[in-house]
Amino acid sequence: MSLTYPIARSLEEATQPGVKTARSLSEAVSLAPGYRVERLETGWLHLPEAEAIALLAAQGADGPAGHLQRYEDTSGNVVVAVSWWLIADPKSPPKPRPSPPPLPEPAPPSEETDHTDDLYFRRGRTKTRRRKAADPNQLDLFKAPKEG
Image (cartoon, rainbow, N blue to C red; front, side, top):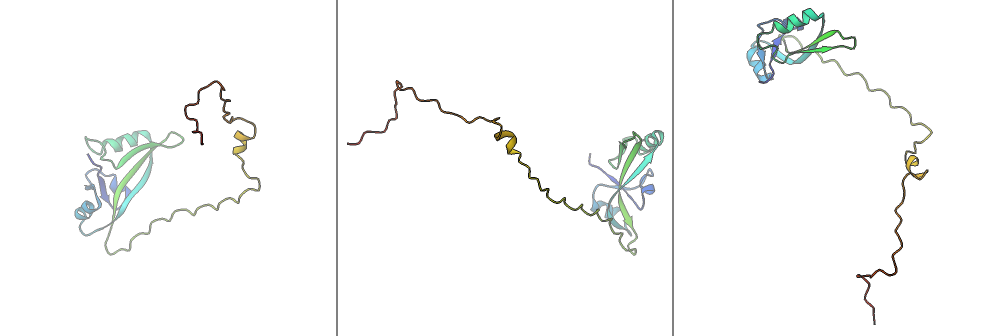
């Protein structure tokens, strides 16, 4: 079963039972005539345990159709993620998406260089392979032919 998302104007409307749902953007556009589908939006609800269970149970006998996901924050409180197709009136200007935070400035290179190889090669942790001397009594099968 693929995930379906409600088609709504707000987070509150998306959590109401019986709202239309769509699997794809094109299906959302066809189910919301007279509206512009802006994007797939995600909102967060910080709820007490009982309200979260009631919200998840109210979505139907099959449970949530993928648009509700239950999480816990670092304190152990319940957080419900709600994903929905955000719609708006076609006459209203599109809402700009919040811009991502600026990237932090890279740290200047330190004056001390990192010599990771020194951990392995300076103190003799790796050993070079030494060839054993050939036994003079051993028969050499691949001796170079004598010229002459």
